[in-house]
Amino acid sequence: MSEPLVAADRLRIVFDDFEAVRDVSLSVADGEVVTLVGPSGCGKSSVLRALAGLETPAVGSVTRRPSTRLSFVFQDAALLPWLTVLGNTTLPLRLKGGVDEDRARAALGRVGLADRPNAFPSQLSGGMRMRVSIARALVSQPNLLLMDEPFAALDELRRFDLAKLVRDIAQSDRLAVIFVTHSVFEACFMSDRVLVMTPGPGRIADEIGIESTGVRGAAFRESSVFAQASSAVSTALRAVVGDHAS
Amino acid sequence: MTKIIAPIVSAIVLLIIWEWAVDLLNVKDFILPAPSAIGQALQVSVADLAVAAWHTLKITWISLAVAIALSLFLALAFSAARILELTFYPYAVVLQVTPIIAVAPLIMIWVGLDNVDLALVIIATLVAFFPLLTTLIQGLRGIDKNLKDLFRLYGASRWQTFVHLQLPAAMPAFLSGLKISAGLALIGAVVAEFVAGSGTASGLAWTMLEASNRLQTAKVFAALFVLSGLGVIQYYLLAWLEEKLTGHWVGR
Picture 1: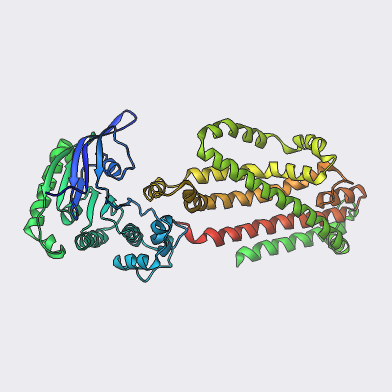
Picture 2: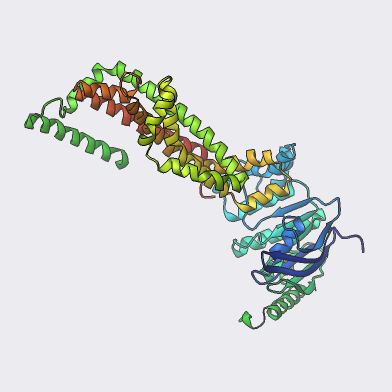
């Protein structure tokens, strides 16, 4: 197996005297979609933030291959309300000193927002705002995309559309995605691998691989692979939550 | 529409009652002039009043500009280093709660004897500056944590973060502070003119002082009318500016 794109080695993350994450190791290869699932407060977001370098682990280390170009998508779309859709999308380029509007327009096209470049975030629905956020993440042509419960505030249909969008882009661009969610559906639909975490302090309790070929869509949702994966992830989640589950 | 018509109708009714009551009760002109007399005074001294108003406005706007610069500087320093805020914010509070009218004579003694206008600006600035400081501090502190993280991930420099994130993010708070501070700067300028007394200053307050000394009560009212008119226009101009600049991004 080739060298991983990003790896975490025995991470321990502590806030004041609260231990959020204990002994988490994981590695993600190019183009791989990996999901962290677990009950609320299990430290999955902290692991993601540590992978991005936004959190410093008390123990352990994060290694990213030097060629890593990382983008991050937050739970709320985290758009600048004073900039238009296009302005928000070009922001990463502008901060690097080279605005390339064509690239931004292309990224907007990929998320289905080519026709709204001049709208302000307040004029968009939650789903559209998240699409802008994804376009902004794509504009710097990343090979690693970290997403922190990005679809949590959206309704079921939009969740499916956006999960499919991200999965398709990951597949066509060989983009590695690390995705945090508490939705079993999202985890199983999008991922090549699902890591199930225990509640605080968060540890990785289980790992479920999901093999499939070709593009995932409505048919995959009804396949036996998907059904088995969903059941396995649900069982693992119940096991880590224990008696509290019901 | 009712929003505009209702206050206009009530104002007209009030003026008619006033006119009629003054006439009926035969109130002396120097005690309470009728609206028609005030209108006449306004007409007669329109040139004087315009000059005086311009002077008061100049003091107000210079003070407001100084207050903006000062509060921006302090708010940024406070947000950059908490120790500065802990050290100096209490002084700002002390300045705020001390009645300006009690401090004004001191400032007149220190700088006003040689340079009245400078004293006026200092006094009006002291009055105007606090709401701007507090709203700016809040605006800078209230920036979404995710947005700060985003800028960190992009490797944005301190300057870039300031220009592209902090300044625009603090804009709504700044503009609402500005509406309050602009009104206060006008009040501060007038208070300062009163303290400076007649003969030295030449703004609207001085016009009122002088007119009242001569029992030209109608002219006092005329100046008062101009003064509150300026305050109202200033407020609505800033409200319009606020809507123009940040109206499209509320309800993020």
